[in-house]
Amino acid sequence: MDSLVPLFVIIPLGIAFLIPLTWRFIPGIYRYLPSAGMLAMTVIALVMLFSLGGETIIYKVGGWEPVSNIPIGIHLVIDSMSLMMLMIVNIVGLLAGLFSIPYIDKYTGENYYYSLFSLMVAGMNGVVMTGDLFNLFVFLEIAVIASYSLVAFGSSREELEASFKYQVLGGIASLLILFSLAVTYWYTGTLNIADVACVLQSDPGSDTALFIQLFMVAGFGLKAAMIPFHAWLPDAHSSAPSPVSAMLSGVLIKAVGVYAILRLFFTMFTITIEIAWIVAVIGALSMVVGVFLAIGQWDMKRLLAYHSISQMGYVITASGIAMIVIARGGDPKVAALALAGGIFHMFNHAMFKGLLFLNAGALEYATGTRNLKELGGLSDLMPVTSLTNLGASLSISGIPPFNGFFSKLIIIIAAVKGRFYFLALLAVIVSIITLASFMKVQRYAFLDGVKSPKLSKVREVPFLMYLPMIVMAILCLAMSLMVIPGIRETFLMNAVNSLLSVIS
Image (cartoon, rainbow, N blue to C red; front, side, top):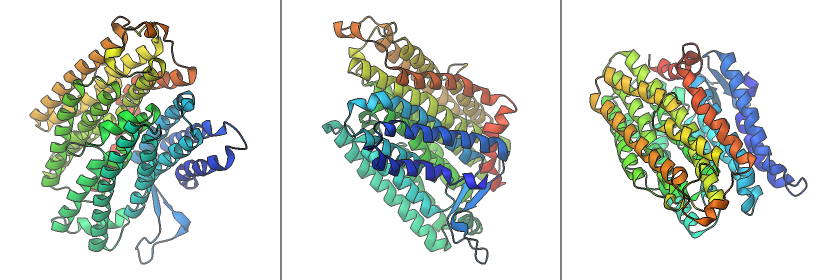
């Protein structure tokens, strides 16, 4: 199994560099290479998840062994949490890649699009697997620099402006992260995450460790677009081509933002009550402010973008609850439950939000607009898009039997058990407002009468566009099975335990 680990970086990087070399000689092959690569990586991740059984693999790049017990080489680390993230990244990437084949056909420079798309996936896979801080930063930059270009891919004024704003704020986030890593190296003398953890946890009350954590919260919070670091996200997600929006919202803000926070804070640091409350408050603010900003939007993609902030707020809030319980020395079962709810919702969000952005792309592709006031009566004309959008809307709103219901329920139960009653109430209220927001989408886009003669000629999108939507809608139902004992342990609790085992 060890030899399979580097394939998660080698395959997408290889495809990204192969496309510019082959597209002139084998026309059209670049459209299918990324999806084929991501299908292969999804299968590898699934096989490894069932084979490892909760164990951890450490792959030493170049075979460099530690010197005097000090790691000197690059390490790639695979555990249940990273495998689940790899599966999510590559499944969403596979489906967005298939959706792209007819969707991106209207753009010029398709070969560049697929090359950048593969680079973005390679960067995210690297962030998920890396065992040292410097390469975390390198892979993070590979992913976000590719995403800057993809946001501006249409080259219109709106897209270029959104990409510029994204680059400026993304550059500030990278600077904050790089500064925190520099201070970490100065203080610990190492960049290997496990090695840094040994040094930092030997001095848990250090002011330097608190200083590092504050900069990491700001840097990765900006990458994850948490309130008050969210200014770039609505423009970037709404301006990008819809398959890219699905990747940005579905997996990028998780891999380079939320996942990095979870991995570093639960693995490297001794969790303190101050940082735990900061994380919980940022999560609660994101959850509430995001949904109120979303409900007034009429541009469907901007509405979805603000909901990304709100839904990621659930994940950060749940993580904050787990951190507070651990810092207080409370019941570890409550901490595990809160973290399980947060991680579960992060996985669920990748599916239902990725699907919603593909639905928005399908509407724009078929009608030429994403303004809800200009749509209506499309349920009969675009039945697949209508039904899959309904399923995703019910899922994000927390309606059973869809996956979003179960992850939100776990978060609310954990908040109540941990006596965070106000946070539990906020989670319920936000879910109700989310439902109202998506009832508006369903009504104005699909259920009202046709508002324009042009819309009467609209037809369902091509097969390669609606197939990924159907698969994602099925997954929104199938992922509910992760609450069933046996399945829960394999897919969810092993991921939770891989983070909490470091603390215990």
